[in-house]
Amino acid sequence: MGVSFLIKKILQEVGINPDRFGLQWASAAEAPRFVRLITDFTAKARELGPIGKSEGFDQEELQKRLQQATRMAEDRKLRMAMGTATKTVRKDGIFTQEHIDEVFAGKLEKPIKTALGG
Image 1: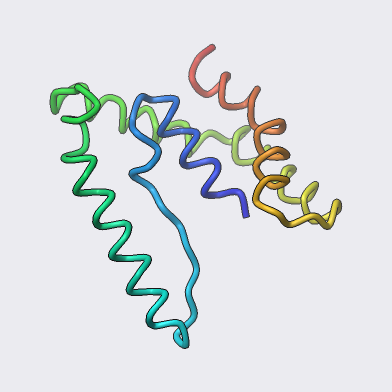
Image 2 (image 1 turned 90 degrees about the vertical axis):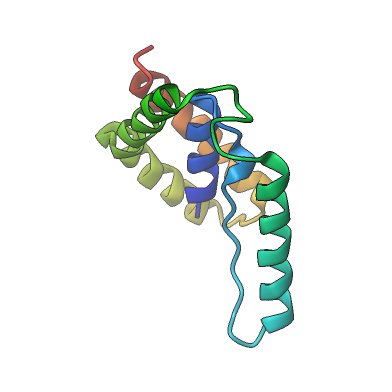
């Protein structure tokens, strides 16, 4: 539910353009939509250029930042906050992207700062 929000937030926090991640759903019956999603994402990736280079990182710095992102994603408190945020959204019964992002932003702010070491 909020996985996309979390991944984009982690990428942003480590200095990697969050537009490098995309998560969309398409059923087998939506072939034209699937093609459009893949085509649009591929165009966006080409526009952004090689990961790290367009962010101004050399390979060593990129590896450090990706490792930091991995540690954040593995953080126990952050994962627990994800579960809490998911339960809140389900309880609220409001499934708009705006509401989901708002709930996740509120529930994950502190654990993200903690995972960053701050």
